[in-house]
Amino acid sequence: MREFSLLRIEGRPVLMDGAFGTELMKIVPLAGPCPELINIEYPEAVQAVHRDYFEAGADAVTTNSLGASPLKLAAMGLSDRAREVNAAAARVAVSVRPPGKFVAGDVGSTGKFLRPQGAHSEAEFEDGFAVQAEGLAEGGADFILIETMFDLREALCAVRGVKRGAPGLPVLATMTFNRTKRGFFTIMGDGLEKCARAFEAEDLPAFGANCSLSSGDMADLVAAWKPLTSTPLIAQANAGRPEIVGGRVVYSQSEDEYLREIPRLIQNGARIIGGCCGTTPSTIRRIAALIGAV
Image (cartoon, rainbow, N blue to C red; front, side, top):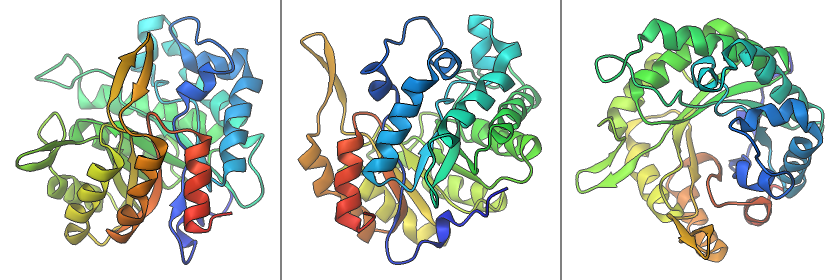
């Protein structure tokens, strides 16, 4: 296992990559219901996206495995290939990883609900996340990033499952929040302090937020969260809200508008930054220049 020194970078924030699926679609159409199979069927396309982000200045990229839990793959009849798909995702990213850079094994929500809202138990979720983590570890991921979680209970199932499936790998986690009149909450009603206490209890080396929020709202979220924890915070904002214009998805923030908030995001306490939906290698390249990552 490579020494995990991502959080030891001094003098600047750690830089992650940006949106993946939209970049992949520029190279190969996401035909079929499972974009994660592209790791096996068109690995060179996945390599190209990872390479673009590394060359842009990212310290770490996330594997193409966001939806590769057995429970999510079951809808496509692929649950029994979960370990294989995740191992392939990690291998593809590792194959273009430059010296001194890192690969995050990406673990996303199952898209299902736990009881009583849904039909699944915590044990089912944990078992599935353990299989996913086994594959990512087998493929050579340096750490696991659990992201885009809207239910703290599911996020904690993921933490426990990942620790079981890949016991030697550090685990980081991000939730997705909405801005309300009362502050920042997930759609399940989980607030910043509740999430902080839960992740601290699991001894995560870093946690934070991704998706849903613009860079300005994310900067405000970090400002609200920072006084509640001493753990390094992760912030990966969307480029605003998605809209359909002329038959294609566009985001409400321009790249210049997005980047204008990055200094404030950092000043407010974000230690690990990157992009989410609507961001590109160009976005990451400009952030890298801004923070001195290149």
